[in-house]
Length: 253
View 1 (spheres, helix red, strand yellow):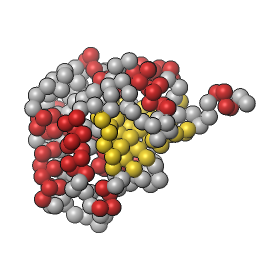
View 2 (cartoon, rainbow, N blue to C red):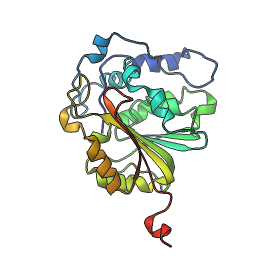
View 3 (cartoon, rainbow, N blue to C red):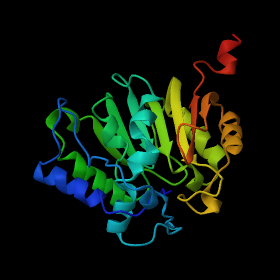
């Protein structure tokens, strides 16, 4: 269930900044990751293939996740803003990887659960968390999940994000039906993944899922579609769904 990103060695530098306590400072006391800096368009457009099974050194996988160019096309602040106010919410990041989104949400949310099926990424997440400042350390939890089950407790999460991971999930409708049980009534699910176009970046075609298929699978699993955006991100679509506040049986009583 690993995700594709261009291969540039920024993630290791980000962890080193945490280790040395040299993360860039600002007016907020939120934890800082590697700052994204604009890069030439040619560097962003350079196609890089992802090993289909996540093969390769772990350092290379980390570099894939934490590319400095990712901020240009992934627009993490825009993505997180789609979830609204997270102050009193528990958020689950499925396919968290190095915590690219996870640790950006920690200062904003009541709790963030970084979920992955790869033990190496779980250890990486924990190694970053111990370097966070005290107010944020207790807001984060890593969780080793199963390929077919995110292992959320009933109604545990108020919001869930799945970024660059959806196409790697097997038997997605069954997975979504398990997932919806772990979301509180009225809770949100945000899915962002690569369009099925001839893109300069992205995973192999077999790991791309069409937008219409995502919609159908969400509806089949019991979610309502709230928002679809094909234009905000250059290479990806955005789907915001929600768990109904009441089930059909409850609303008919």
